[in-house]
Length: 67
Image (tube, rainbow, N blue to C red):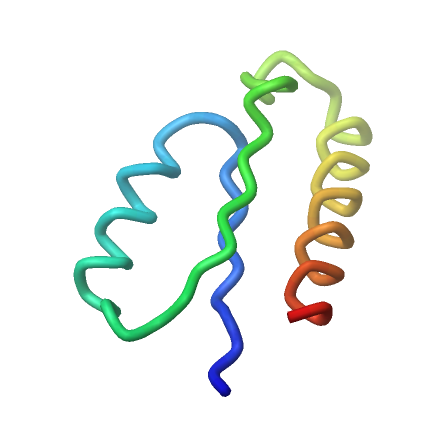
């Protein structure tokens, strides 16, 4: 069984990247996680952005491990 590829989107542009990957890697499975709630990140502090990235990364890794 193949493991999925995890993709994190900070809220802008990720769907187009996912669509491109699905087209090119059509035999692969993807887990897509988007953080539209906290988008845009540009006005957030670096520490807040790092915290969100680590929290989201942990969530994505857990989803991938539970497959």
